[in-house]
Image (cartoon, rainbow, N blue to C red; front, side, top):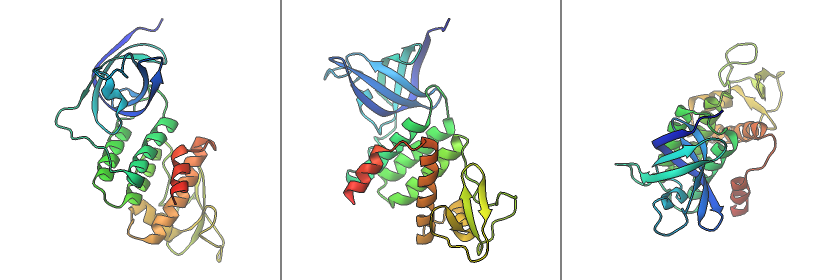
Length: 242
């Protein structure tokens, strides 16, 4: 028989919330210690409810809950002390933050803690809020997300364990790695890359246009692989905006 869990003031980010019944919310929260949690905020849609904070993403909260099973009951929500709101500006930057939320929501399991991913997510939100270049923030987070979940990409060695050669061509095979291609093979298509591109991604050489393009292609394919072909809503909105 499952015991009732009582959690007090756990550092958490709200990934998503939706109305539930007349005045309540169902909240998907991401906690450092407990991972992704499904919570019911009873009365959370009432204007004066102390649980109304749980409807606000991009702000570090201290959440308390009790219960067992798929949905616990949220009992308290308050802003984390000495932590400024991390809501990014509007437009594409806000959409990028929503993309981070959707990735965590779709690729993590409930009650499966990943403290390092929590830290990577917090850092990425802060970087987006700083209004610097958006693309490097997204690519770094995608790499960190995959690594934190045990799906890290080997971008320094081929499948035989040899160091990647900058001038060589490779096909990156999911869950295997980079396979050397014959001389003269084309890069820039499908999952074919030059060694220089893969090494640039590994170094985080985001100042290089070639690295950014290769990283976008590689990481989109990798994330789609682990999503098992299920589309991301934020990608559709990005495409419609461009």
